[in-house]
Image (cartoon, rainbow, N blue to C red; front, side, top):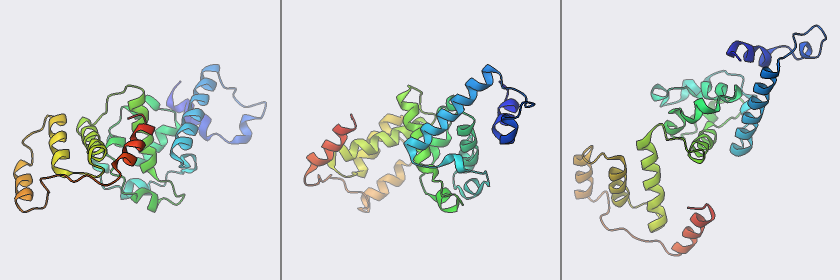
Length: 208
């Protein structure tokens, strides 16, 4: 089914669909529409964000600070959700480059926050075995989570060391890091929080 046919169905006048003179949908078109509906509904249910209320004013794209690095702009991500392009989105760099600054949600006239939507797309990619489009971003996420699980809070030095090993990027910014350590901006020794078991219990509940 072509994009033109799909868009024709999505945006055709609702009355036309029920009139006898309307062009009937093929079985293929109906199957695609069901996929589109279910995918957008899944995104809404998991993120809690009403993506189907978007009318593409593109204020989210205009305000996004990292849009220049994304393969699909925020408004395009929403359009792809409505078009049911799940595979395209799960392989996109956009979800991994989103910094969750909430600028999009602040600017959106319908209050759609794309940060939770991007989180859902990342979760779906990992659950379905799709390799993260930005491997270094995923390595940083993993190192951050591991640090909290181990200490109850982030210990920057051990987290960054783990990240460097995961990303196979040992020497980038090493000079700046050493200066921060020398000036006492990054503590060398970690400190565990009290009641760390409560934090670990949260991890166990999520299966980590």
